[in-house]
Length: 123
Length: 108
Image 1: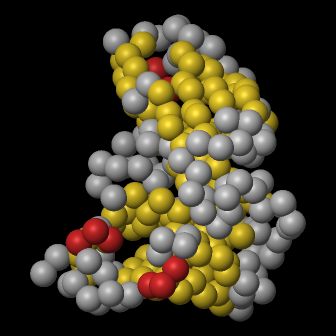
Image 2: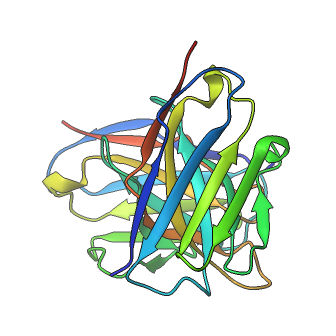
């Protein structure tokens, strides 16, 4: 049974860099797309981006300029960095396993999720 | 970006009721739609993918249908554990993956 365990700093000041890591336990790391999604308080879900085991990334265009997702295959971990945070970046951040077709990327869904990390940006 | 609009935004129902939630895409997305259930303080849970495929372990009272721009999630007989918020999600405009705004299912 695949499990995702995530961690990272929960309180940031404006202009700092958000940094979160997600570890994958109990399953294959290759063959999937490892995603980050966030949810502001009381609001809906926003997909941030993904990485595969080879390090190939795709980002939501609305966040692309500030997002970096990286992978450490030796530890079955992937990480999110979001720079220059503001109060608008306050949210619960989730990591998740993405399932997708190799060429038909419109086929994409997330079947395993981490528990979420609450990140608050406040001066 | 493809906009996903769910209706209703909230619905009240009783245990045993049949409930249908609708998701409309701003342009055609073939059958590439997923549905998730989220309970307060928890991560979303995948229910349906490819519009109508039931995720392993999800009860058969959940079903999905639709293609193009109009999709539905149906719960055939509501159980107490089904009261939650439901989201649809498309990836047809990858990497602009978008979710609906959510439908809150409450106990009547």
